[in-house]
Image (cartoon, rainbow, N blue to C red; front, top):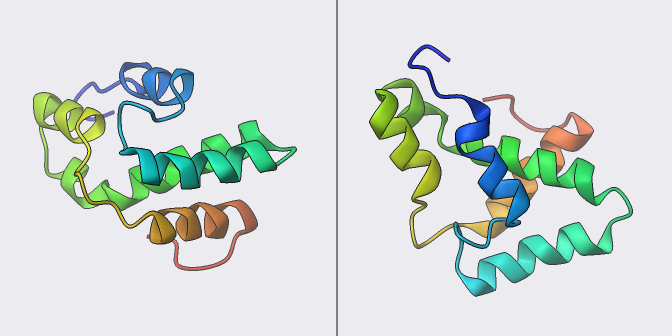
Length: 99
């Protein structure tokens, strides 16, 4: 918010495309498996988004607007999907670290 990054600038793409522009296929399949197997898929979708933001938090806090957009729309090729989904689960159920 400090640099003017509106959630709609990145989250709309994440949610509409179910992260298909952000991750490679093996990672996508793991995320989609969680989402499609859950009756609460839209709730899980939000927590996956929050987990991504938390994972990138330190980089985002140091960045200006353009750098933030790059961080939010250009993901690293190698993502630890297990850690990402665990973070989403921790956020969903209020367990695990808060940072």
